[in-house]
Image 1 (tube, rainbow, N blue to C red):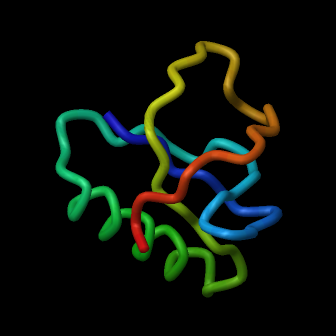
Image 2: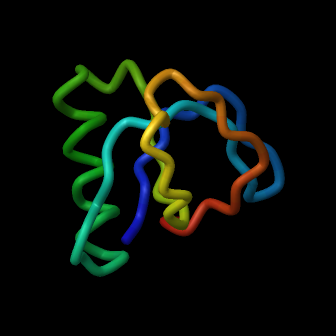
Length: 72
């Protein structure tokens, strides 16, 4: 499982941001396609990264920091 993260900061392959969506039962390539589709659905006003899952039932609005970006 992967997590899509709306990027607030990006540096040296690490990203910080807030949870957008979970990508369950998908490959990294499928998760990256979902990330690009999410950007397009938001008129490319946000940047979305794929990161490893950090399952948290209280993820909405939580700021995650310095996670490795996988979709580059």
